Image: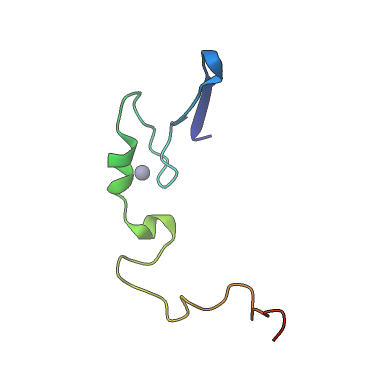
Length: 70
Ligand SMILES: [Zn+2]
C-alpha cells in the first residue's frame, strides 16, 4: 500500500503518499513527494520518452464514433 488516509475532527481527511508508486521508495515523514516524483522520467511510468509521440496518438480509443442523424 502506498497511501495512508487519516480522518481528523470535523471529518477532514488527509491522504499521504507513503511510497513512490514508480520505484517503491519509502518517503520520510516530511519529505517532499513532488520533488521525488519530478526526478523520475516518463519511462518510469510506462510512458514515451519526453518529446516522443506515437504516430497513432490521435486514433480513436474505441473505434469509429457514430453521430446520430448522419
Ligand atoms: Zn520514485
